[in-house]
Length: 426
Ligand code: SF4
Image 1 (cartoon, rainbow, N blue to C red):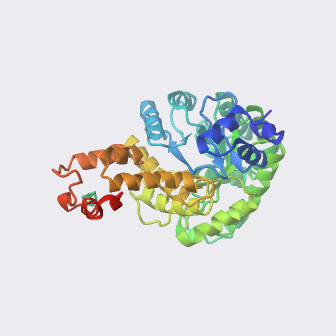
Image 2: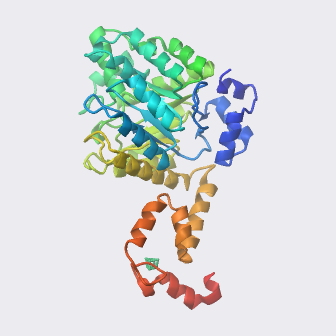
Image 3: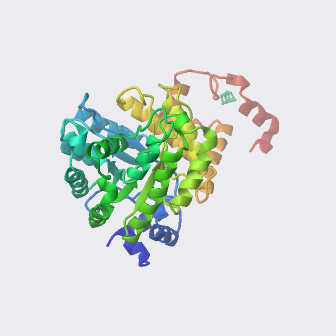
């Protein structure tokens, strides 16, 4: 029985109960949403990850991407990045390794953290060949099965990149064509081999594997826009339509899904993307990669992604993939992961402040922080801060003789107004 099957049968499993408790939502609501595919709890039956709910009424979750490249393979560094991501508040982790012993890297990463782990199995299928297009459809499915048996909780599969979407791409006026790595592998393979994408053609078989291990399918957005110019166009929406059909098919055999979204989007198109994807995918949880709201800030794309992430979260995106300062430039360092995860966590919280189901809970923390600020209670401020360590370092490295901070010292507005108001100052 998969979790979705149990939920459809009215069973509140320990996993559902644990998610309900951690989110402050009643368990029956979580069960009902899991049954309908509105909440996804990625958890492979052989995995050891902690329960994590993504979707309706849940707090906005953050994923951190790590992984080697063919140019740079340092397993210890990837393990360190995984730990840093977890310590920085990331909710899930994706191992996107493409270089070195991929099985060993994945295992080391899984052993080092207990966040749900995601992968993109086609990277491993391609890695066994010098040229990507030489992989076979067996390589692709074998990689999925291998990741499932290893306990991976969710896999990104670009089943929506089919011949129909490819035709729309050819007719488009895109500048950057395809920027999704898995999408690019798939398209190159389809063109080279003159065949339909095996993950679309044999989607039933993919679902069989996923069902066997209760592994969640993250339906990849292979046609996501890689620049503002390419956003919200026919290839993107063509793929969305297919992804909606694939969500339904997965639900019919009790396999959990969530759906990836763009990419690069100007702020005024984010609402359109979110609402149309939610509609086309029957409320499936959405996982946005950013979205980055401008193309001209390399070095600061964790900020462009956080701006887009907040807006996307406000309109209903459930899961944000962090970007780091290295985005578009280089393989991220552990410090980049820390910064990217923290900033995306801020974006997620900002979205939760206005989101159904989480608004009250999220606001309670802001209210506590406001009181701690008013009372100049620094320890409480550090405890409530998303990055209390950084807050402490900044304040304590700029000494003041005042119990306020070195910005205004004895001219602190909090002190002055509190003295003036007396007991009314609370
Ligand atoms: S000194 Fe100024 S900046 Fe610092 S807590 Fe008081 S009002 Fe705020």
